[in-house]
Amino acid sequence: KAGVTQTPRYLIKTRGQQVTLSCSPISGHRSVSWYQQTPGQGLQFLFEYFSETQRNKGNFPGRFSGRQFSNSRSEMNVSTLELGDSALYLCASSLGWVDYGYTFGSGTRLTVV
Amino acid sequence: GQQVMQIPQYQHVQEGEDFTTYCNSSTTLSNIQWYKQRPGGHPVFLIQLVKSGEVKKQKRLTFQFGEAKKNSSLHITATQTTDVGTYFCGNTDKLIFGTGTRLQVFP
Image (cartoon, rainbow over all chains, first blue to last red):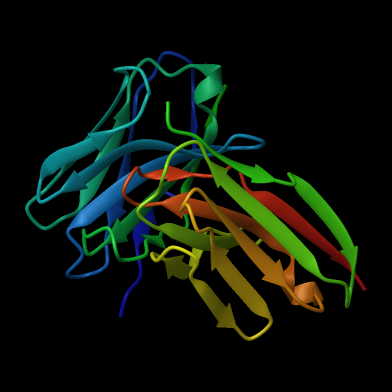
């Protein structure tokens, strides 16, 4: 079966701009989580959506937002980009219950200049 | 707040040597999951532990969950160059991951 698909793979944006990243989960997976990964910081949790509802949220500013559609696809938006937002953004999907592992996408590498 | 710390941050070993990474939480965890991320890749799910004191094996990898469910370890016996990568522990209940241990194996 197809894995988790993230688009685009690479993105270069200018400070102050906004960006939208997309994630298509594995068919049947209802939970989509987003993470920011930077060197030395590990995986920082952004938010999780389950059945179109935000179920959990990490400690990121309001510039970071997301949503999930009825087909479980999810988008993440970052407004007013800052240099520090440069990172690999990973989305992970799961069936939605705590006892299942996450399947990660290949990520979107965002560079803010 | 909830934190999961991993040690060591980096580990360089000679091929054939053993390797262990430790994951420590400030609070009790309902489960621990382990992931491996190859250089340039994305995290891949390895295993989940849910019971106190649980031990699971996958070939040369041994995973253990502490009795108090606050810590976990991943032990690799006789490392190979294919083991290179960053190993993360995580908890899906709290949706947090450890800082990761980067393993480098020299042939």
